[in-house]
Length: 262
Image 1 (cartoon, rainbow, N blue to C red):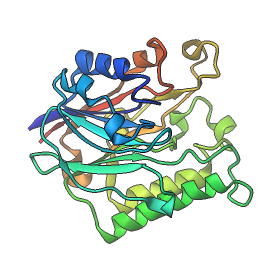
Image 2: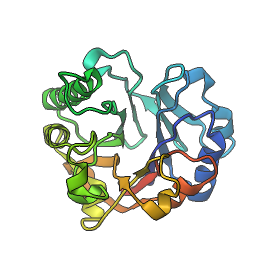
Image 3: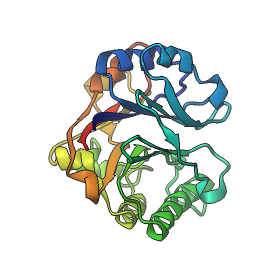
Image 4: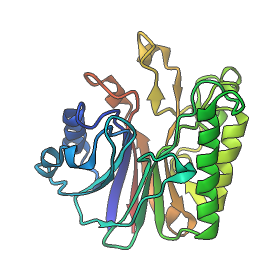
């Protein structure tokens, strides 16, 4: 089974249902994972997506905040959800494909503005969330699995527009990068995007604050596709659909894609 998977922080699935539809029509990935849906599951406009061939959905939602969903052309088997750091947030959902591949869709907390847990509770929650993810992967090593989502960390120097200027900015601090690396190692995950695109600046998020996001190009690679080592070699054709950041009333994130031949 060859399939393409995409991940996209949509920043309200109801507000941007038309953009999701545009992506599904134009790019037609077999599986689309959404984060920051900001909707209870029963309010997600599945009928819009089903009309385009995406009849299957597994989701974890809540009103107004957070929320993750997996849309698929092929049947999905729900595989649970975890509440890391006991936040009571809808930030994770898992599903399996007919070929047995497990998909984990994550929305890691952003962490607020100050990179110090002593004065910023949200930053501490982010670190705790990642630590508990790592513990879970250590205790139950994943196999035949793909992890996608808005992990809210740009780990490499070339994942941000200016490494030195960003070192004290939440999303690129050394403590966050270390926490993400430990999580990746705990699950023996491979960063598929960077395995495919090993060199050069690469972003998936651009702030709404920039008057001209494209010209300023002060981006960060916050959205990721990982795979366990046993299937990572089957991945190829990774890319970021940068143009989607310029669509009408867009999300501040762009979709990230990878194809697997399994």
